[in-house]
Image: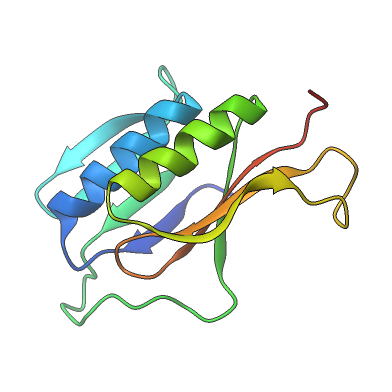
Length: 127
């Protein structure tokens, strides 16, 4: 359904470090790399998550109510991505765990990236 998602950054080098670590844990790679942008996706695919310096040169801000959801193949990958996010300076918004109010196998974690964008890392599979 989606072609891509774009997230603004005020420090692209730090954001690349943040998303490199999260992406690695989820099997994503930096497929495009520019001074003011980075594109992430599955190896052999195309970039579907873009981290960019805003084109209008104004500060990047997080939208209220906006969450970027990244799918993990396993619960261990959720744990690893959450740990990588925190290590890279992200802020914990909800430790890895089951959230059965969504569905019985919803295992997710929530973080804020370096610019405040909420990122959900989730595995929908049974253990």
